[in-house]
Length: 215
Image (cartoon, rainbow, N blue to C red; front, side, top):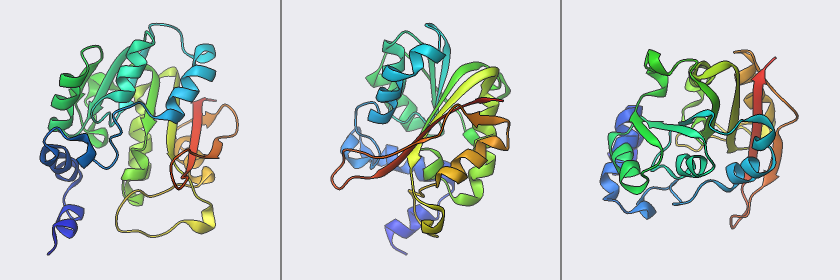
C-alpha cells in the first residue's frame, strides 16, 4: 500500500495529526497552511463583521490548524478560541501566536463546555476536508457552538450540484444549495445569498462564503 493510500485510509484524527507531525514545523508541507489568514475571511471581517459582531465577542475557529485565522480575529479585538483535532497543530499554533487560546478538541465529539458559548463561529475549509457522509454531523456540531443569537461564517470550495464528484480524497467542493441545506437543518439560514466567486490563486479556485444566523 502506498503512503498516500495509507494516509487516506487513516481515521480523521490520525490523518490530520500525521500531516502536522510529519511537517516538522515546515508549513509548506501542510497542503492547506498558507501562514496567513484566509483572504475570504479577511474580506468578510472588513466588510460585514463590524455590523454583525460586537468588539470583544467570543469567537470559535473550527479546525484552526496552525492558527492564522484565529490570530487575525484576535488582532481585531475578539475573544478567540481556536481548536483542532490535531495535538501537533495546536502545539504549533501556540508557538506561532500568543494572543488567541488554542485547545485540542474533536469537532465530531465536542466537549460540552464549548456548546452554545460563542457569538461567532468561523469555519474555513473544514467541511470540504471531510467525507460527504460526515457533513451532516459536522454541520450539526458547528451549529451547536453558536449562542442562540450567534452567527456562523463558512468558507469552502464551490461547485454546481451537477458537478459534484465522488472523490476519494479531499477537498470535496460543496454547491451553494448543499452548503445552505447543511445549516438549515439545524436552524441556521443565510442572511443573504452566499458569495460565489473565483479567488486569486493560479489557476483561480471557485469559493463559497456564507454567513448564517438562526431564523
